[in-house]
Image 1: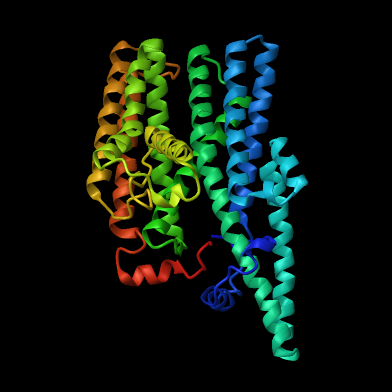
Image 2 (image 1 turned 135 degrees about the vertical axis):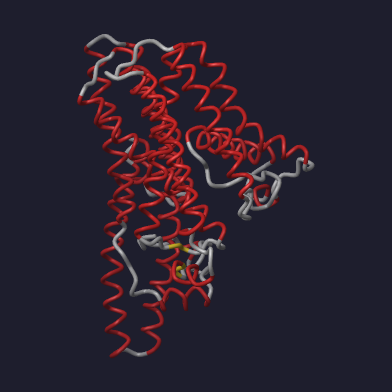
Amino acid sequence: METVFEEPDEESRHEVSSLEEEMVLDHRSHINCPFSVIFSVVLYCGEAASALYMFEIYRKNNDKFWMSFTIGFIIVGAVLDQVTLMFFHKDLTRNKALLVLGHILLLGPIVRCLQTILNYHKVLKKLNQVKKESQVSIKRRKMMMEKELVLSIHGVFMQCKAFKCMSIIQAFFGSIPQLTFQLYITLTIREWLLERAFLMTFSLMSVTYGAIHCIILDIQIKHDNNDIELHPIEFICITIWRFLEITSRIVTLVLFTTSLKMKSMSFLLITFSIPLLAPWLEFWTNGAHLPSNLQKKFNPSGTVLVLFMITLLYASINFSCWSAVKLELSSEEIIDKTQKWGHRTLHYSIRLLENVIMILVFRFLGGKSLLNCCDSLIAMQLIITYLLSIGFMLLFYQYLYPGWSGKMLSENIKNEPKPM
């Protein structure tokens, strides 16, 4: 995770422990440019700009149906992004009018990114000052300057965690519907526009990036929120796995939908409802006890609303790819930390069966495909692609997963103070 800083508010200035100070000062030389934050904003801007351009094309062609859904998906994703960033930073209580205005204009990620870059350069200057002061200044002045750095570290986790969660929410509440819808339009009107291709490319990159973050966050949660630095071979394996899984799933869904039109909705609703209702069924069978840590922050209705939103995100992720975690709504941590091959095997078995059913429906009930090749070849390629994604998943968890041996775990973990 890249290390970026923002100035803490007055309320948090006395909340930093001595252990956190020691950890920060030991690792202050490993401060990297926040490339992940910048990349998230590039995807956000690229997808929004492409969607607005396609909206204008549909408007000129008087395609009100295509136009409405295109702009609707991008607005829903953008609004949820603003809410996510504001939730993590809580700027409404600190009178930061510029940041709040940026979120109202749906430009919050851009404003946050610029703020992060400025704070990153400020911290670099502070580090140089601390280095000089450690040689020539009195001990008390040195400790005060190091204390400021420790307080700045507190903002790093909120900033990075906020953008990671924003990437996931943007991917599965905005980009997945947009990608599916634009591919559906392409297969329906049998016309491939370059502008639509740009929008689909940004959406696919956003979904893949969000799916990669799901794996990274899962690894961090299972290792007590330690920051895991993946090796290049591990990251490449995850990227290929998620790309193949998502593309095969989305193409299968679209071909199935174009084959049956509205008749496909019942099957898709059942498919989506299973991961949405399963955590709640388990919640009621376990006694329906709300997590106490959430009850301290919200009233009972607010706690249920938060759990429902988490479950909705969980179902949206599992609808297109594996979420990498298992929800336990009645537990304090909400997420099961134990590695269970049974849950993973069950998910991929069900999804493979669903894909095969949808591909067979497309093969025998679908109309003429857009591609200039036989439907049997397309069906076979989709099944092989999904099986390849399962193969890369097995490769990662069997041989490349951080922590499969004590040696690898120590090499991957970067000690960072936990967020407060």
